[in-house]
Length: 319
Length: 319
Image (tube, rainbow over all chains, first blue to last red):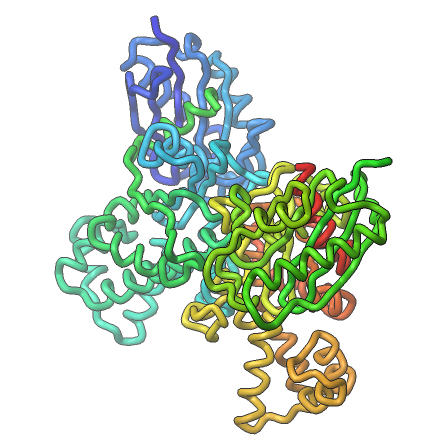
């Protein structure tokens, strides 16, 4: 039997698990909602259950796996497997020994990494960035996360590299959900875009986006709601998306001016949803601020989709 | 006799050369003005003469050197030794085979690198960043240049990494000398600061800075002119320096959010001149935009001073 690895992508709304062989071929997968109440241990229990489901689909026991990788939000410590300050998860302000807990529960070695970093590595090894040696991954969703591969190796700095969402695009600019001013994410993150849309609605701008979302039963705006608003010719949605793409392009260009990577891969819920519509606009925005503009990096759309994070987590065992 | 290496730092106003042993101890040095007219070959000839002077001071023939490193502005190609688009040097819009020319002229192996990158490596190996494994070098002078050392290795990307001066700090902001808008250098570069000071003078703001510079015989503002203006209580100089420090801090924080390095070293003519006065302010500006603000990088002042670039160039033979 081939050597199999498990991967768990821990998101704010769902937990995606997968079982892959050493080539990254998916042998089984499962998805469950992330608990919205309780403590880190409740989240860990849901993760273990989801991993067992994927293992059952692949016809393997968790304890037979070569290893289980976890892509986690918050501050994930690769050395200890502890995760702290995962503020979009219930009761997770402090530190929880996630790797240790899952290892005991599932009977296999567990490694923990940053969710966006492992998704970047997945695109590098198996996805859109396979032809390149250096890569900036940009995941545009609720926030904007980033990951780095330099000279074929992951670069995580002292553990917190890749925070492209908090590159400043406008000094003293819009308030960011992180509490600072002018971060790229303050313009481009779906959460910040929703806050701005509500603010503009209150001061008299017209928009159908909240009605459209309500019809779908969403009390938070999803990427699809922004797309439906565009399709209804909603001017406010158009303006806020243009503003988001401008901020994304500016921040990505700043990162490229510092790093000069061969490629940039754009993923995430918003990134995948709007790739067709905004990719050319985004390229133009990046070019406008690129210092060596006659030799831009390749700009690609992520290929691994929803499974990228979980597949990337399995790569924590193959670096 | 110990193995000696030569180093040449090619600047817009001066050419600094040095002869060092393998530990980086300086055995001889020389400095000549950079030709302001002619062609790249005239500049190269002045470089060779300056290197011969330093060699004579060290009691060695250029041909006996283990190698001669060059830190060059413009687009310096480490593989070929060619330098192109060095726009602050006379007649150097195109490409010139600087390494080849100097190697033939001086009878020693020549390697060419980016001036700011080699100065960064000098601080890493011999200067203020010796205790660290990763480093962002920021050289604040006429422009703002940057260099990177990651996991003890230089990172130059595809040859153009480290352009921290062109990190955007304000989308659609001030015009930069590079032709783009809102770059950090548009606020912090000494050249851009002078342009802004002249513009403000024309629209009626008061300043003594141009008179003070004239008294010293300077038709371009030097770092010392800015300092003298401050000492005369010049409000415009104060405001433009505060603005520069704000932009520097913002751009450095953005770079740190992407790279999470252990240390940042600040050098360059303005950086060294204003280290005492503005270092605390700069630290505060960086902290304001740092995503992981409870664990900031060490922020140090460059130690090798004017010789850093030339010493760094010699390290092109010891990487």
